[in-house]
Image 1 (spheres, rainbow, N blue to C red):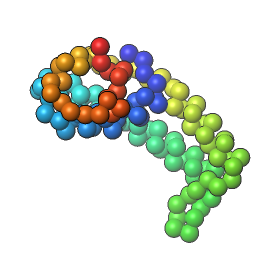
Image 2: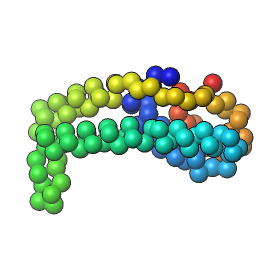
Image 3: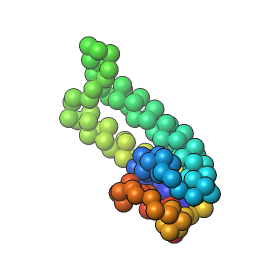
Image 4: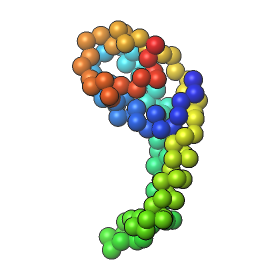
Length: 116
């Protein structure tokens, strides 16, 4: 299945919360596998984002970098959005919501692209 990187990044928090819930073993296994597949994608994105902040930002006294210039911030946001719009292939079997059992989790935390 093709999924935008933006959705993957937004989903990881909810997936990690879901992994901590008591859900059927088979579903837990599938979600754990998915998290392990998606984590490198998020790590790669974070590296690109951090490199871009260093490139466009100004070094602070504490060694960190911050983008203060409005034009450079605009360039940063444009470049980041280009990356977020990339699609990645996610090999994953969709889950039925009812298979989660009596899990209590905020709907905004659930990645809707992974459910039938």
